[in-house]
Length: 436
Image (cartoon, rainbow, N blue to C red; front, side, top):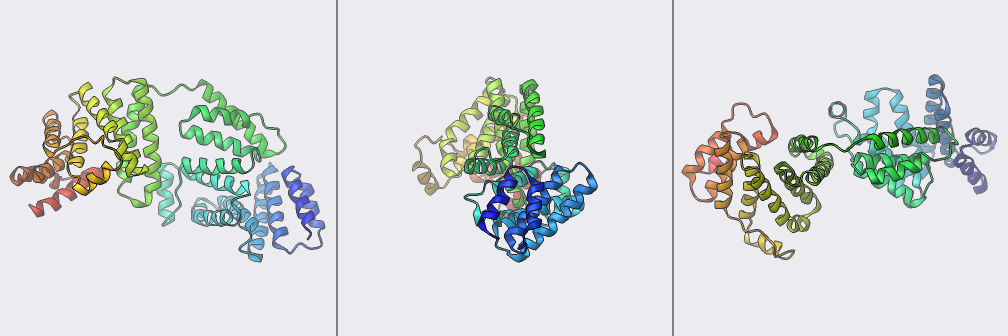
């Protein structure tokens, strides 16, 4: 098999001339090399995409998988073999049912990542495949995620941001190489609430020349998304702050599970975008400032110590503004108290390290924190077990164990803790009571 013949096969594929590609392969005298086998798998796989008959489509996918398997067996370290084995395995597993598809997720990811390690600098297609893999994982709802976790002990997770990074990498390597890459760049930006960027990519996707089934899908889906984008209005303020509240509650549940770190990170960034938009729409609303401060603190926690330190004064400014605008919100006072409590608890060497980044560090004391926790409790007694815990912790830090004990006992003796934060309060309170 000469290099010229392989080049001609690749040119036929890029021109969507799959039948001609198949004819050429079948006429070759040497069809045993790995390079021919994976190209045969690729061609048959794309012929399956062209078929409108379900039985024929399934038959071709399974044939393509046999050829991909043969290619991988011929050379397990071949870039094309790993790339197309992963792609076709994903499609074949979908035909075999939900359970099989879930079981094969890790295997598909493994072959994509192996292909990237073999030739990730010059092939845009593998980055697109990995991007689609990440995008589809990001779309998974809670019910499906629960099902996945019940079938696979350690399933892959991904975020829209990771998917976008892959599609962007593909486009950087070879701009305009594949219509669906334009579509998915638009879809990722939509998922990340970046409508301006989404519109630019979707307009390009909607205007591609239709040469094959993927081009048709790209044009039709991009056109529909543009219509929705045109008629879709941004969520109003009341919707946005409620989205912030829901997302925050979910992040608290995810925070206790290290295996869901990627999901947690993606939700924090999503919550921050909602909070930022809420603040832009209603800059004089207490909830806007409260949730902006909460998600800014969470986001900068992901981005590293330096960023967190640089944003301390901004976080505090929004928390104070939230309590100024609504003095009756106990949760806002609790969050403000916790902010002061964490600052007050910094050791001298931590403060010294923080001063290497900025001199703009808010002054804080346990007395300040106590005042805010007490205010929250006065406004709505017993509203939050974590407030009981923090009252107990703060009194303990102020060397007042007798005043600490009743609050710690309230947190420790919850009869039915219903959230991760309730359970955290109970666990921490029991530990502190043993030390009093």
